[in-house]
Each structure stands twice: as C-alpha cells, then as structure tokens.
Image 1 (cartoon, rainbow, N blue to C red):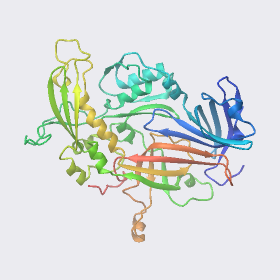
Image 2: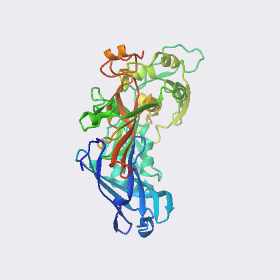
Image 3: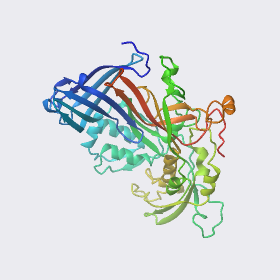
Image 4: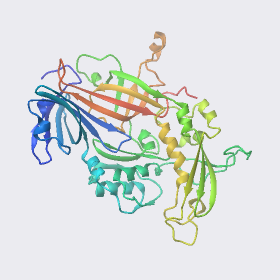
Length: 465
C-alpha cells in the first residue's frame, strides 16, 4: 500500500497463544495496540483493544490470564518490529449482539515471573553485581540483556524473601556512581555555632542515586548522572539519539516529517514548595551509630554539590532564589547507622575513621545526595507527540527545538526558545498503533514524557542565574 503519511505502519500478524500452547490469529480483531515504558518502573507493559465479532476468543480459548500475545508489524521505514507480552488482565468488556469489545492488559514475562519469585540468598558484592546476579539467577534474564553501571561501596544484605524487583529497587538510593566526584567526610560548616539548625554540622557533598527499569532492549541499572550525561563529562553517558522540531506537519514523507513535534505541552515546571518539602535545596541529616554510640549532624546543600552532578541543560548554578532558600535546611532526617553489623574485628568499622570493615554503612554519603539528585531531575516536564518511532526508549536523550514565542522581530534573530529548548531525557513513552480507524489507513504515533534538571541549550548560555 502506498502512503504519504510518516505515521503509517503495516500490521503483519497478531497471535494469542493459550496456556496450553494453542495459537489463534487475532489480526483481524485487533483495533489498537499500545506499548509502554517507564523509567521509574522495572517492567514494560502493553494494552490491546480486541473487537471480537463472532469468534468469541475470550470464551473459546478461553482467555484466563497467562496467554502470550505476539504482535508483529512493519513501520513506514520497512523495519520489522515484534512485541511479545503476557496477558494478566481483561477489562472494559462490552457485549452488543454478536460483537464484544474488550481490552487486554499485558506485561513482560519477567514481570510475571517476578510476582512468584522470592529472593532468599544473602548478597555480598557491589550493588551493580548484585543486580546482575538477581536478574540472571532469579528472573532468568540473559546477561546480554542487562546494562549496569559500576558503583562504589560493597553491600552486605539479606533480601528477607522480597521479590527481585523490590530488592533491586531498595538498592537504587544506596548507590554512588564510581565516576562521581566523591569526598569522604567533608569539612565543618564555615558558619559559627549560633544555636540555629545545622550551623555547626559537617558539610555533606557529592552525588548518588540509580534508576532501575526495563526497555525493549533489556534491563538498565544506571546512575541518574549517567542518564543525564551526554558523554562530555566523567559520567560517560550517551549523546541525544534524535532531534525533534515543533513546526507544521508536512503531507509528504521526508526526513523532516519524521522529526516533527505535532503536539507539546509543559506538564510541570519548577515547583519550589515540593522540592523544599523533600529537602532538595538543603536538608539536615542527623545520624546515630547504634554500635559506636556516636551522634553526628550533616548539612546537604544543593549549591555546594551542583557542579558535581551531570546536567541536561546549560544552566551552571542553582537559581538565585533557590540558593537563598538553601541557606536554611527545609527538611530534617534522622537515620540510624550500624557499620558494625557485618564486622567481627576488634577495631572500628567507621569508614571516615579509616576503619577496616568490608561493608560499613555509607548512608552519610548517599541518603541526601540520592534524594536531591532524584527530585532535581524533574525540574521541567514536557510531553510531546511525534510520528511513531519504535527505536526510541526510556533512558534515551532527545534534543527538542521549540519555537520562540516572542515578537516577530525577535524571532527573526532567535528562531528557537533557547531557554526551554535543548536536551531532555525520555522518562515515559507509549508507542500507539491504531489498526482500525473510522477513516484512513493505520496510524502509528509516539507519546513521550520528557524531563530535565536544568534550563538552556548546551550551545548557548542559560539566562538562569
């Protein structure tokens, strides 16, 4: 079929295989199929609208959960794409005469295995190695389908019968990337004790925090800094995989038609109150080592650690007002430490006192840092709709060019909004395949939620001061 649409695709086949191994051809009964990825979820998922006329698949198989759905298609670039998922839910079922419509909710096979698996084996290693071991041994994931980033500080832990995903997610905030600028201890605050909160506390610096998610290519366990890095810093991230422009759609298929943003909106920006409640700009940490009977206070200040992070925009510092807010901690956290838990020696196990324990408690060096890094990532949230691109996945970076909405004479010299355009990280996406429409041919679009921590395009200085 010839087409002039960059959103066209050709459905090849849709098969559903029963729990007994019997396959049924659903191709003619599928109205729509959507595929989902989320940087904050450890599994991929999908949904499918079935318009069952006279076949009664839901009763003939019957569809009871656990069926495998295989969806194959060819996009407008003649690339073959295959999706395979496991059915876990049927919803929105409507029956009219001999026709019934219902939706199938599906998740990846690994997500289904996760729900019936419990981790019982004690783990002693670097967090990224623990993640690899759990994915391969407990979920049966092939080693080639796992991407991890090396982290500092070995961990000794009992999973306590938790599910694999839960164990891995518990490690995310405890990880410090090996490439991070890290300094043990930290100097005492320059401020003199005055009775105010945190004025005599030790400075806490550095960056921390990982994310764990699944894409079409496999599982990813990487630091938030590497995900934000374009490869020009020590974190060794990857550059943007594509550029997209907000401009009028064209009728014919050209290279530019595939990079057109058909719709966009900013769904969230800044939110200073939320960030203050989470202690992003400044937090006060109270630590008590129950074995050493030692109490310490640390101050985490975003303006002191901003330049140790990787950033998506060209902004070089915390904005002036937020910097003023960080002069006083907006969140107080109390945490118990126990560096002696896995230590049997006669000396000390305190890491900043040159203790020789193999598994000390490094909570001082990742707690506030991981929280700050996590919430800073969502300083800007942008939603876009583009012609379907099945190559995109969460964790990828894309360059977005938005029009300058200033007066015409300004637009002539500055075509794009240099503050809000730039590099964004894909946090969520859905590939949406419309097989049946009231008029026209099948259509494939991609919706993506993008995030970034700072303003500005890398090519220009940001106006945020």
